[in-house]
Length: 71
Picture 1 (cartoon, rainbow, N blue to C red):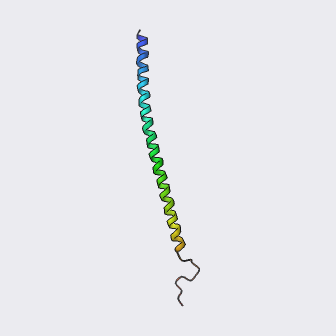
Picture 2 (picture 1 turned 90 degrees about the horizontal axis):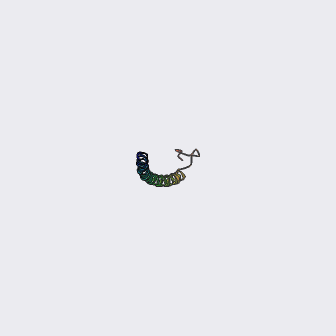
Picture 3 (picture 1 turned 180 degrees about the horizontal axis):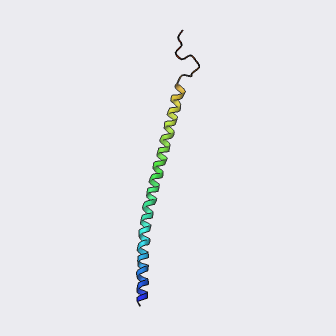
């Protein structure tokens, strides 16, 4: 009977550990989703900043040797 009781206790511990790991996994999945969302937001902001810089660069005068030369 002792072997059966030992086995039952081990199974019970395994079940508890399984539930604990499931909860940990769910929390990690939530963190991954949040980080992926943050990454996507940062990529979008970076793209918008690059577009603004490109517009500013296009507005700069071209350097064809006339800079600073007066009539």
